[in-house]
Amino acid sequence: MCYLIEFVKNTDNKQTIKPWEQLLELYPGLNEPIRESWNDPLSIRKIYMITPTKTRAEQIADLTRLAQTLYLVPNLFWIIIEDEIKPTQRIHRLLQSFHLPFVHLNIATPDYLKPTQNQSTWRRPRGMFQKNIALQWIRSNTNRNDDALVYFADDDNTYHWKLFQEIRKVQSVGVWPVGLVGELLYERPICLNGKVHSWFHFIYRKRKFPTDMAGFAIHLNLIHKYSNYIFNVSATSIGQQESQILDTMTTQDQLECLANNASKIYVWHTKTQIMFITAADKLQKAGITYDLISEL
Image (cartoon, rainbow, N blue to C red; front, side):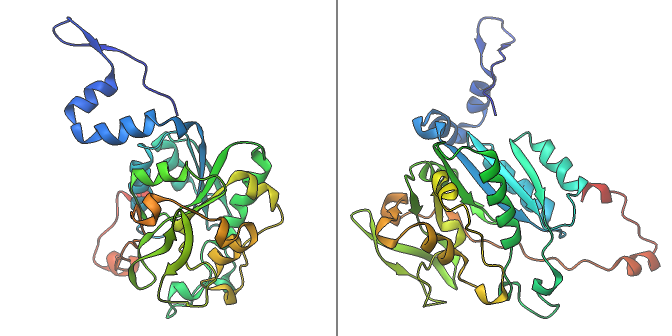
């Protein structure tokens, strides 16, 4: 991503201002996120953001909403992995339309690990095959000595732009609260003097690191150092994926408490409501045909 460097003249021809300055004048609310994010000295540290995604009616809406946030984040490389046998053109066209740095990967989750019709999605490992492909791509396409961070981001979560400033502060592994997760308003590390003392959580009480995947970031050199690490994709690993990767790459004593000593919430584990969609055969009987299906 690059800065806008074109100049435009005012209609009175008396002065020239940059396009982004015009934007800030029209929308003052953008001043803080743009100036803070793009002027942050830590923005030289690249973030590799891993986002698994699967085909569903709400997919394009979710990815579009997420992309709007990423426009406020400098020096971020987006790794999107489809849960498909091959990359779909619909998603590739969408990603190209955002003009964000990205790579589009794919791998299909085996049918035996997908939730059955009457089974809750949380009872099956989600996005693990996709995350493993992303880790493989990172190890093959980055240098272990690069000063960069790796973050796992669901496509339907909600992210404050300040979260990415916190991610750039990570030296090894950093942690922070996540809202609307674990049957609570939030889960979080309880920190004393910048170190994790204990955890505020409710479900899966025996987790060694009771946090959500959105609640931590890892330095790139650890991804290379533990080059054999992959997520356990068995059905018995539910609720343990976060603990598995953190237990491999760090200890609780080494965790860095960020987001004002874990007192600020900058990411929420939101879930897009699954819409009821009338079946195609019923529409056909009613003489109704979609004419914008290519947009979906």
